[in-house]
Length: 331
Image (cartoon, rainbow, N blue to C red; front, side, top):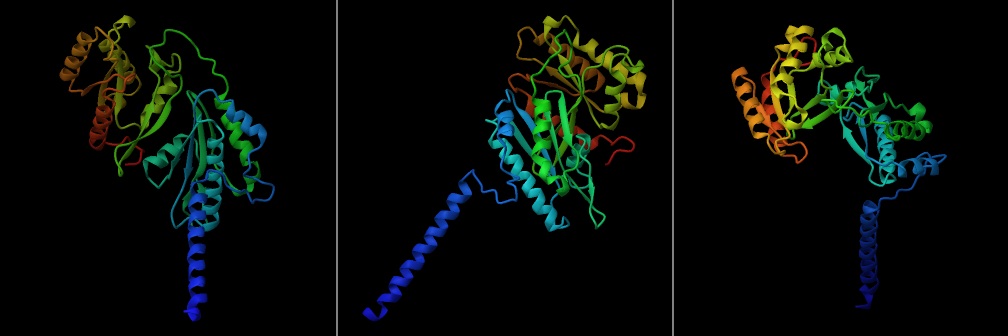
């Protein structure tokens, strides 16, 4: 037995070492901290950056657009990972007020459309293919974009990111008035229907009479609609507004027809909002009957409670495949 005793001890020691390594790897994978071994500690946030992030009073959205795939050189993939790591460090230091969304802008995809609409510019690879690596930062109507992040500016990346976040996350100065809309600039979002299908949605401020002649910011808003396949009208059922939701639709439609009959003729869908308020049943019935006569689907929702939003998403997803893309837009 003594002859094999040293072998037994060696085997036990080896097993113990393996268990220690497994335990270490598990703890390392679950730990939020990481070691910064870069020259100059490029990915260790400065106290000034942490102070700005901790001072955020409301959520800021950071959209990270990064191309993936075997065609991307290893060096760029490694750099893109470092960029994402830094963004995650920002998120961890923000007390939950930094919301990070990651997208892979494949060619001719909704993600690529969203990247371009957010001001992200493609970089050219030696192979001739395009590579996206950029960040779009937004809060309410305020937006900033780092159009193309390159290795040459790696040392200034923390500064670029915190500057963009500070600009959009500064104290809001809202304009208060009886506006029949909720935003002053178009806001873009990417909606996922399932694992395979997504679409880009643009929230465009309401138009006022005379918009097609340039009144207010009408022409700017109308141009944003030219690339759309489907127009979704959001009508307010609240009786307290004193407005007729059907008349609101007619006002918008008249501006669309004046600006572009082709645009006005595109497929449409009506969303009747605020169904959770009292005394809206009669107005909803009027909108539903109007939509039936015009051949327009009507989806009742209560945006405040979320009621009907899933049905709205599905209705848009159903309508989009049969809506022909506008001239010059990708199919």
